Length: 380
Image (tube, rainbow, N blue to C red; front, side, top):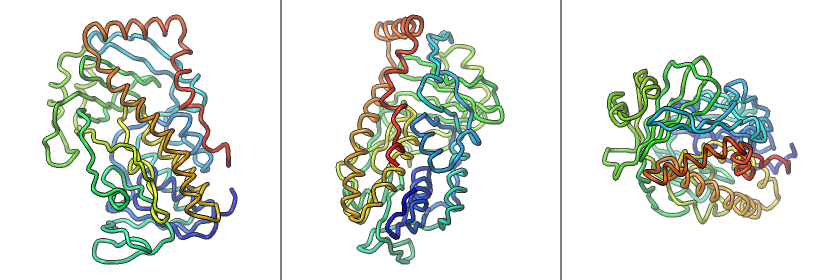
């Protein structure tokens, strides 16, 4: 990689996007620090999918996705009410490496990479304000930086600094996430039912990731996530087929999330602070792109602030990333509708999927060539 101007960069947030940005920036010569408000750089969430566009970034950063993931073979839409498969699409035709990964394992891989690149990672450091020369931490300590990267997620302090108090809105979807000791081949199964769906796919060590989503009118609980009862999950999906019920019966611990998001930010930077990942463009999980888009953001940001003029580089970063992430967010929103169809529209959609899978299975994945085959690392 080329050498960057020796800029001092402070990354706020030790998640996937923040650690990837820290690693990418450090490898280009910037002096980078990461501050994270949690007690440790870790992630206790469930699984995620690293699609080919994301795996290219990991490899370009010198990391091995196969060391933490299961190589994906296929995606299989199913009727959740009957349990029967509708179609099967070969993910080996997706244009690159596709993996199922536990979020904590990916965080650990990125953390190790950042530490090996000499990036200091400071935990229990909550940013309370953006200052003209950096940030202020809870307790009054000031940290200086030429650039502050807001990789601090949906409730980003950096986003509020740039855009004001635009609170995230509830999308009308609630998700339960769990991991169960169930063996399943390297296939992502999308179990679709009216008003709800379940996605299952394998992780390493014989575990199965389960994400169950249902439409709900409101989210009234305090906060945006909490622990829930496995029986509450099973009641919410009490009308599904026996083979799916058998998976849900193995759930012993489950978390419940209200799915919130912001619109894609109109303004991503002010010349001294910049947004990345969910802080700029939170997306529903129905295209499996949240982590992948954050990885792409990290690469482009590091590449563009190589320029002598920081503001011009940040302008190019926003101009390149905003149209692409807007397209991905729109596609995820469409899937939220398509997975939950009812009545005649549901029957027609399932018939169309079956026909596509039988007559032209490659056409399904070609719809996503713009997403999966995109190589953000091609320009160096």
